[in-house]
Length: 278
Image (cartoon, rainbow, N blue to C red; front, side, top):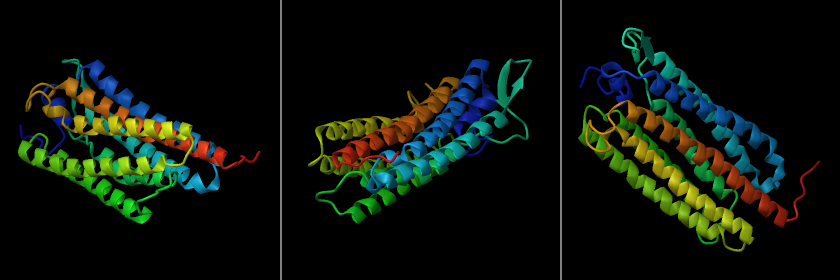
C-alpha cells in the first residue's frame, strides 16, 4: 500500500475501496456541522462578552479567536473532502478523483496549533492561581500544547506507510498531552479555592469535560489501527468514525468548554457585584 505515499488513510480507502453514498455524505455533513457550530459560537461569544467583568474578558476574546480560526480551517477541511472524491456511476461509490486534491487531516492540525494554546490560556484569565506562577504555567501550556500538536502532525503522515514511526511520534505527542492534563488539573484545583460553590462545581465540570473531550483525539488518531494494523477499522467505517470523533471533540473542547468557562466568569463577576451595562 504505497501508491499514495504518506497520504492519510482516508485516501487509501478512497482509491482502493471507495465510499458508499451514506459514508461519503455522513462525513461531508459532519464536517459542515463542525464549521457551522463554530460560526454560531463565534456570535455567541461576541454578543455575551460584556456579561462578565472587564478583568475576565480576555478569556472571551480568546474564545472569539478560537472560533474564527476553527471556522475558517474547518470550512477548508470540508471543501477538501468534497473536492477529493468523485462519484463513479458504474460502481455507485465515491473514489479518489484523478488530478484532484488528496484529503488531508493536516488542516485540523493547523487549526489546533492555533487553538490549543489559546484554549489553555483562557482559563488562566478566569481563575486565580494561589500557588503556581502565572507566567510559568502559561509558558508550559504553550510549549507542551504546541509540541503535542507538532509531533502528532508529523506522526499522522506515517499512519499507512510506517506504523513504527506513526506509533513513536504518537507516543511523544502523548507525553506532552499528559503534561497538559497535569497542569490543567493543578490550575483547576487552585482556581477552586475561595470562590462560590456554584463556580467550584462548574470548574469540576470543566475538568471532566476537558479529560473526556481531549481523550477523543488520540482515539481518532489511532482509528486506522484500532483492532489491528490495517484491519478492524481500516475501512469506510474507520473514516466515518474518525471524522465524527474529531468533530465531536472539537465542539466539546472549544465551544462547550468556552461556554462553561464564560459561565464561571459570570458567576465570579456577579459575586464581585459587577452589573452589565444596558
